[in-house]
Length: 391
Image (cartoon, rainbow, N blue to C red; front, side):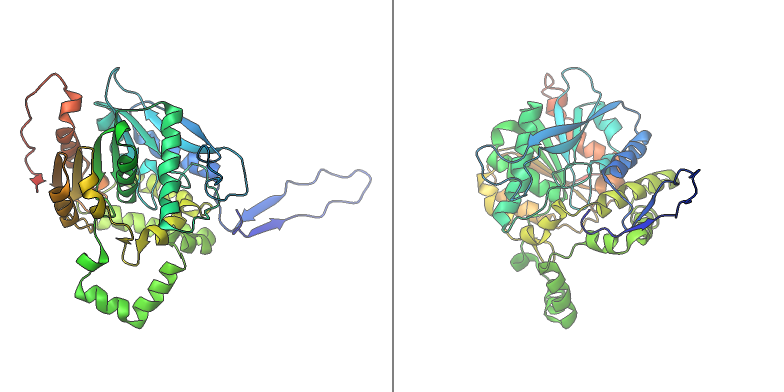
């Protein structure tokens, strides 16, 4: 890793004729992580999942076919890989592909794999530049190039897996990527499930007076400068070296434990997720550098999906936690412009990570939304689950 500080400790060897073997060289990394650490942490986290699974590194080549850009402008022509986990399922089960959000990886769905795999063939991926996938140098210079980085790499992965007619579920930034992909390749997606998706709000429409005042203050100006300089949270974790793990541990313990809106993690789950998050965040910067090109300060999309709602071709279900900081009103506005079936469901006692906060209710929402694919021979619409809210 280019930004790692490596201290090498060596010991002097004896100069006598009967020289003893040198002790092994010890290397202390300022950022103690690697792709192997990520994969090992992933295996430990997935040990809580009862369903069997297989992991593979799917080769997507060095760039889009016919393109002179190699994911993008990387100096290397080496093939790139998408870390892919496929769970055991019943024959002829509908396929659902899970796409994680910003700062996350596929393991964040660890509380959902068992239930979903009982109804679907579940495939979860790490997007290019995240988790255990390849991390090419990120040299995109525009929103269009950055979107292509994720959309085109996903399409190459789909081709390699020979998939079509699948359900695509994306969370947060993953919902943004899933939406953009479905707009470009609607022929391959039969249903979109967007979980707290980013990109449906604009600063002009949803910026509060309080936020506007803060942005115009000196503090807001400083933070905006860091944002436009592409200073990511991951850079802070790396900068703290081995102490970065403590920050992650506090975050995980608070967000999914002390301050959880729903079902808090067990002590073991929290420990496993902490290690997983730390290694995925501390590894080489790549996909994370998309931040300033996709969103402006405040996480407002530079190219809002709302502007493309009238072009939607895939039936869509939005799922939000009741305490999600993502504003579901953006989905309400988008639905008015869509010419395809669209549902909006809110899950109680859950925030932005609704699938971790309240997994049982989240599963009810997903299974209700996708019932026609699970039971294609049954034309009856099941009753709407109690406790959920249809918008």
